[in-house]
Image (cartoon, rainbow, N blue to C red; front, side, top):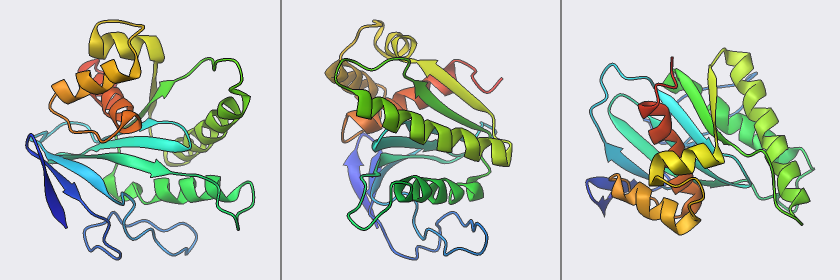
Amino acid sequence: MLRSNGAGAVRREATAGASDAPVALAHGETPVADPFGEHNVLQVDRVGGPRILAIDVGTSMGFALATQTYIASGTKSWTERKDETRGDRLYRFYRWLNAMRGERLDLVAYELVRGHGPGQILAAHCYAQFEGVLLTWCARYGIPVRTVHTGTLKKAITGRGNAKKPDMLAAVRGLGYSPDGHDEADALAVLHWATTAKAIE
């Protein structure tokens, strides 16, 4: 189902077994019926442009997928469930990535975080785990990867390398997107960087 989200964007709610969902199976597994879940969709004309998946790596993971006709963005939560082992949520992420294979991606881009603040050891471990899964998946399917440093990304979007989260959110909305939160905004920022910085080359 699509809902208007203003500024030419629409919101698509999760629909189990959606017929237009990307199809991909790994070793005979059950496919992820709708890999996006609830997300925003912006209709665009990018005929001939690269198909790019941009990700803000973390437990609350922002994503933005640019196809030839639309940009889908949202946030996926990979919080560990009570009945999961330590590796289960990483495997869920891998299966989610597998569902993107139907999009025939030309590039995966993500924000490169080179340091975490004091008291963020667990966040650093989490980032490294998800980054490892992402890089492994891209290597498995031969998808090029590009990264952008946090400061470089902030400067590209806001003009200041030390911009705060509210500044990034406002700047991304100023580009015509309608992110619901900071994680989605960061992914859209990475996507904007990837499409304007010629990262595909």
